[in-house]
Amino acid sequence: MKKDEKIIYSAVLISLLPFTYLFTKSGSLNNDLIYTIGNVSGYMGAIFLLWEFVLGNRTITKFFNPDYTLSIRIHIVLGVYGAALILVHPILEMLAYLQNLAFIFIPSLASSIDLYYTYGRIAFLLFLLTWVTSTLARDKIKYRPWLYIHYVTYPLMALVFLHALKIGTFFNAFVWLNTYWYFLALTFIAVLIIRVLEILNLLKNRYVVVRNELASDNIWLLRIKPIGGFNVPNVGQFFYIKKSFIGESHPFSVTEFDESTGYMTFGYEAIGKFTNALSGVKPGQALYLDGPYGSFTKEGHDKDSAKIVIAGGIGVTPFVELIRRYSGEKTYLFYCNRYFKNAVYHNEFQQILGMRYFDLISREKVSISDCVLNCRFSLEVMKQLLPEDVYNTAKIFICGSPTFVDGITQTLQDGGVEAERIFFEDLGF
Ligand SMILES: Cc1cc2nc3c(=O)[nH]c(=O)nc-3n(C[C@H](O)[C@H](O)[C@H](O)COP(=O)(O)OP(=O)(O)OC[C@H]3O[C@@H](n4cnc5c(N)ncnc54)[C@H](O)[C@@H]3O)c2cc1C
Image (cartoon, rainbow, N blue to C red; front, side):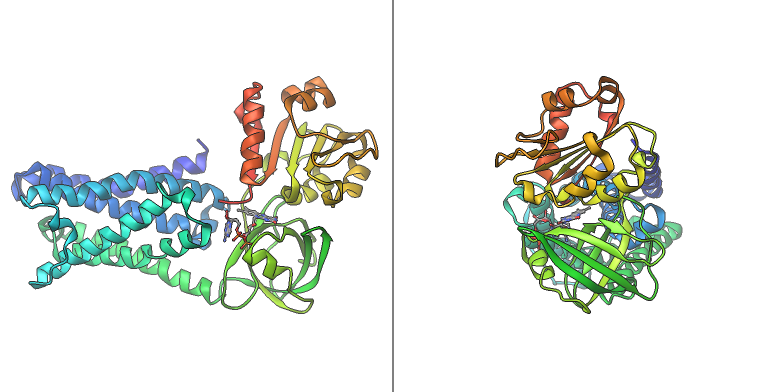
């Protein structure tokens, strides 16, 4: 586990601690252990949800750690474990109050206190919807419907805070706990405000399109320059690009950048709604960017250490500046494409790396040079082409589609390559 990961998990644990105090006091308030566990699980489940909000917001997490993929990974883990607490909460409350399942699901507005129970019921139903679509049914749902359903977590969280305001003897019995709850609610409001500022592009930098050209098939190169301030990325980082004032932001690795002028180039494949629309932007058009995020390739930011770079198609983007700035005598690159014409950086890589660069072409026969091979990536190919010491010791960087990255990682691990030497980024969360 990385150091930052440990810090985040420790912070989550610490934030849960105040509610464990209720176990020591439950006897004086209510003898029923089920009731106490039900209450504490509800509070703790809410804290898990709040952490998911904080970790899911890249403006906030960037402030502590630019590795947004790490935050998203932790966000997912908390989603799984927090779900257990949230699912347990209404069930234990139902048992403690000697009720049946209708107590959990059927809204009631009979009294003012019922209204607050009903806030909890609606929040629970919304939670079930997001939980099921993010876990059990995730593979069956496309990205956008999943994303839009995920947005209901905003009203859900607001209802959770309201729900606890009037319900729970514990909550009102301890002023400091009450204050802590208000602090958590304010944290949620702060996240909401940051989200609104993000939507209004107030936390983004403006750029203008210099060029947007087709490089091959559906692979495009977008060159942009900043209007005003800009953030300089590290090699391997990515930005979120928004192509109009209101609309979606999508992540793209910086393919080329100039730290003195702020000019950047992004290589992208037009494969869906956003990237197809991006291919239509014209020189002079304004774009909104936030970033940089990520820390991919940072372990390879030196010229001396041995590195093996494996790019699948458009997964080459985080490697262009890596090869330009940090390739040495022990840097080897495998650029995997279906067709040779899609190897858009072929000439430059060959110039820099010479015989340490290989095109692996899988869908056509080409015989241009010894470095262009008609095959897929495999352990045998790697063993055959690399010096033994590089094969045995080099750090290995992989980028491409999730299927490509999973496949190569699995191949390497099956072949006995240690997991600590493998670093990857897949082009999809
Ligand atoms: C860290 C990172 C770096 C990336 N770098 C590049 C790059 O350099 N070049 C490139 O061509 N592509 C890159 N991608 C992928 C790119 O973001 C998606 O191809 C693009 O968002 C697809 O959107 P679409 O509407 O065109 O296609 P869709 O068909 O709608 O989406 C295709 C897939 O892209 C993913 N996706 C869609 N929207 C988002 C989003 N907002 N956030 C994250 N994933 C999304 C989903 O897995 C989806 O299934 C990167 C992705 C990530 C996570």
